[in-house]
Length: 217
Image 1 (cartoon, rainbow, N blue to C red):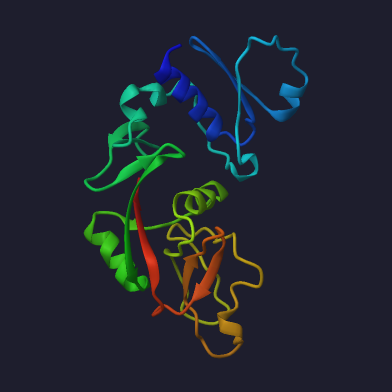
Image 2 (cartoon, one colour; image 1 turned 120 degrees about the vertical axis):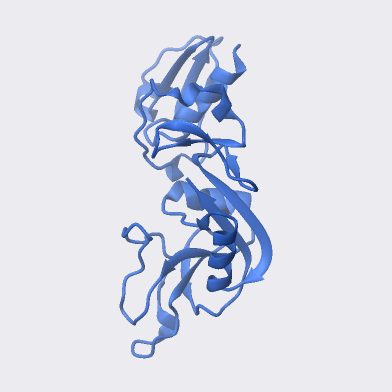
């Protein structure tokens, strides 16, 4: 069995929201949805891989003929850039995780508030953590258990919507959040953290979190 191709095949399933099972043999890679898999008649000698945490996968558009199969992009020091449609090296101090093949990450365990975390990431050549998808938030809960981290979204007045730097709305708040520390008139909480359960919580921008995660793509 060709291990690099097997890895790429499984990675294809991990970034396709409709994929729940994978059949791989030699260089044949077949992805199955739950319904398609249930309608199959498979012999016992066929090896099928089941994707875990299925409900957390986020849809990404990817051409199966792209060079994601480039072997260089299979290691942790390279990532597949959606901007250039090519394999690029991670910057010094950053690595790629197999769960998120399109971004490189760096982390530091130290108490920092939002401004300090943002400044630190800039000094490393990246930006502050932006976990926009369910898959990225699930990744955080698995890779950094029992941690909280500042994320790159702020507001400046009561009632303003939290948005990511690209202008998209932040989704995935915890129950009752954001709540501005239960104040409807006095502005108290203008920054966000991601909690250990993978949901967002608004906080005072001067409050400290124990983990800083930086990223670049």
